[in-house]
Length: 342
Image (cartoon, rainbow, N blue to C red; front, top):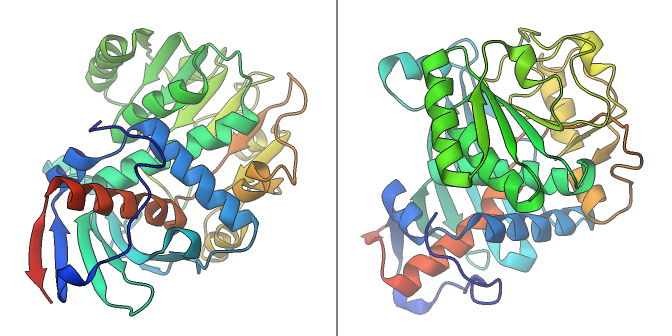
């Protein structure tokens, strides 16, 4: 995961005059080389969502284009004054890339100096996207999951499946058992073996989606994002008391299954409404709380052991701009990256 560090050590430093109009470029491998650990990323997101809850950030709904069905290319801008972080992520997600041997997610992130608007860093965004998405789920789980949760079901054994196992074990250290499902059974088997070795879990690849849902304390759905859900998960599958992180929007859920949840939250209500307006979330239940409200405890998280709770985090620019300045600061400290003239 890269070198760790304390929150104080990782405070972003302002751009200094020594950059002389140059941009620091960080490749994906360089981003991973200087990356903070998962616990630190969760802490950075918690701070950012506290700022969001207090109304101290700027983050418009992300505009996007869709050159192919169920593919997207999104522009994701945000400004977090307390972190001195302003910038944009230009990110794509193409489900058909896997058949070409290409990653589902790709893109770049740009940081700008808030005082002048001048760009000072460009970096690959694949690691950031993978880790901050899982960190947001873990932050939601801190308020919505039962602390004593032991069994985790993962549907979709790719990058997000891996990072979610890591992130959820930070906030739910009692997780002991992993049930993994993927439409590619061999992929699920490899994933289970890797997660058992990496995290000391009892991990099993299961044959059906229901086996990765029923009986689980925590469920993560991490397939491609679809405008029209395939609705695999049916009513009665999710156990009373379970927490679900729907990383792929509502793609996995039948409308009647969604109606069984007692509390549904998201990371940005305005953006969820924006997605609903363009065709997503057509059968989605009312939103109980924004993640910023949970962090500030303005709205309650889990209140009873038997509640079914869901976090449907959209993956917002706030996440990226919370993490990117720390990566930039660490790269400067360690002398990593390439300086380029604008």
